[in-house]
Figure 1 (cartoon, helix red, strand yellow):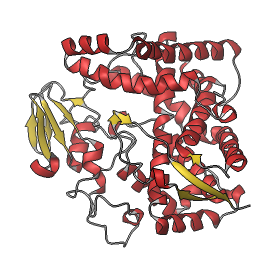
Figure 2 (figure 1 turned 120 degrees about the horizontal axis):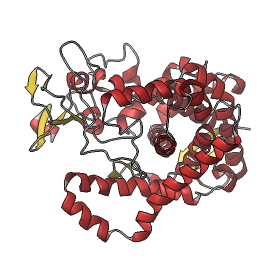
Figure 3 (figure 1 turned 30 degrees about the horizontal axis):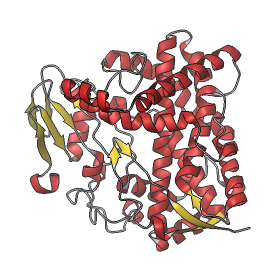
Figure 4 (figure 1 turned 45 degrees about the horizontal axis):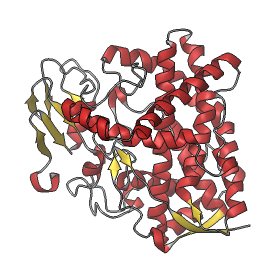
Length: 422
């Protein structure tokens, strides 16, 4: 629609969609003397299974600020340094698995998901989910994926309550039960984590050091549940999408592989990997071409109204910048449909790109707390995989990127052939 109608499109009676950099600042930006912060759109988010709000969906601006202060300690640079050995343990386990089975074709979607779920399981609950050991999804992980799809149908219910009730009646009971299963797993593991206690740098240890008893158990359950979705599937999605685009672009794959292999394996660290400029450019381009959250995080214009792109918009209007549309628009990016990591490097002919619109972790006071953790996980996982293996895309995955989305992507298998270097 934006290709046809321009930078702002009315997509509903009280709903506007934007794709400009200025809209990102005006919609998602911090409160100023001239503008109030636009809160979450309550018709786009619902409470967790137990009725409690978590850090992503909490609509109240002040309450969100309180939650953010509580969780900041667990996602700080200091916390990431403490967590690096834990992350490395599971990445090394991934590489061991790939060495064991590399003569077969590999499904990188399963391997990446298994790694990110095991990492987040230990970070959130002090215990792994054991996916890398079993090489298959556990019932809980299957429930997480089902919950994502159910969430898309729940969105319809928030928009159209009567239709939502009808959809719930039509959904198989087993699907609805999976929602409950996912949440109950989070409850059980939080309870175990609180009972046993430990001195590991996991999320709850760091949070409780800062917050004491400021969080209720229901809030802990709700936030743990969302961590197991937001901190796992999205990271694995980007890794899968970037791997696909690199394998479809052998010249880009060669450059980034040579850059990674210029370092000895022991120097693939939290400190060194951000210095690899082409690797960093690949991640930015991967996030642009295949954003893990392709849809629009919706806000509701604050009380009294706000100016967006120089135009006064009344309060309660629902506004958003959809990531996929903004990142693929030729209004924002030259050769917008092509995978070109060089666009993120200086002096490569892409200075006219409107890169301010690129906000894959959102922006402003509600930007993603786990951004640094996600970047480090993505860097170390991909770097270790490409350091150890030469990868080639299997023909059955040539059109892998042709996917449906239910808020998040519904990813098919990403089949590759791997050849070990050593």
